[in-house]
Amino acid sequence: MLKSYEATYENGQIKWLSEQPEITSARIIVTILEETKPQIKRRFPIPDMAGKVKILGDIVSPIVDQEDWECLK
Image (cartoon, rainbow, N blue to C red):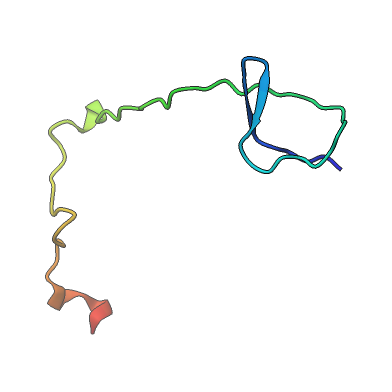
């Protein structure tokens, strides 16, 4: 059965990040994961919508009064 263990490799040494395997000798396969910086994706408005959108409410207050909510009746 294959098991995975997380470790880092620095200056020829393996440093275990989680549990260390309880074995004295084994054949291993090493996969190197390149560290990448998270990419920030900027969102841009759709040009076709420019000047055509009307904001009816915000995230703090609802558009409709609470008295008009059917689910509260």
